[in-house]
Amino acid sequence: MQYFPAFCIFFAENIEKTTLMRTERKSLLFRLFSGILALLGFASCIDPFVERCEYGCPTTGFQAKGTVTDEADTPISGIRVILTSEYKDEFSADTVFTDTQGNFETKRLESVSADPFLIIYDDVDGNENGGEFLSDTTSLRQLTPIQTEKGDGRWYEGEYVYTDKKALKKKP
Image 1 (cartoon, one colour):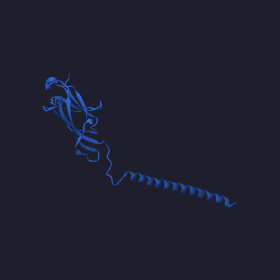
Image 2 (cartoon, rainbow, N blue to C red):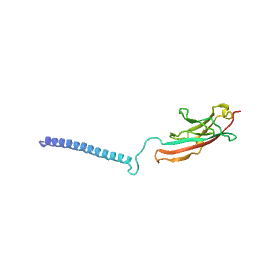
Image 3 (spheres, rainbow, N blue to C red):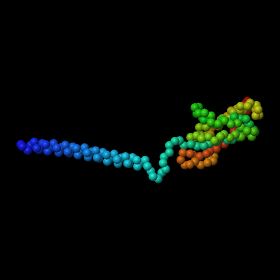
Image 4 (tube, rainbow, N blue to C red):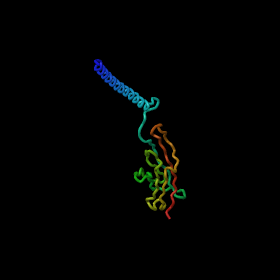
């Protein structure tokens, strides 16, 4: 019986050491696996053969130009040409007037896409340009763009020109 207290003390000390070792081992394994997972996470985001990522929206530069005539193919001067967005909350992008040859050319614009833009034709000077004409609209979606400058292969998609030949009808 005299060995029993010594055995209990020895057993209690070993249990304490074993528990401490298990805790240290768990902590070491936790740190090791956390480090490995962190390295794998960073490594999955890095591709040494690809340029770094860019954030933002792709943009394109575009311009509208063309000629406005009457139904007899006679150029009409003084027609207001408005390049604007289809969306009601957007502002008018550009307003120009046709010259004596019926030609117009808007300024260069930049947007995420030229698709939602409209060209609106309005006769605002009455009979001064050979009669009164009905308003008309063309969507840039209906026109075939001509690429005048290539994009950079990333977010800039290049420059485009949309050309429209519009024949306006006279008001009845």
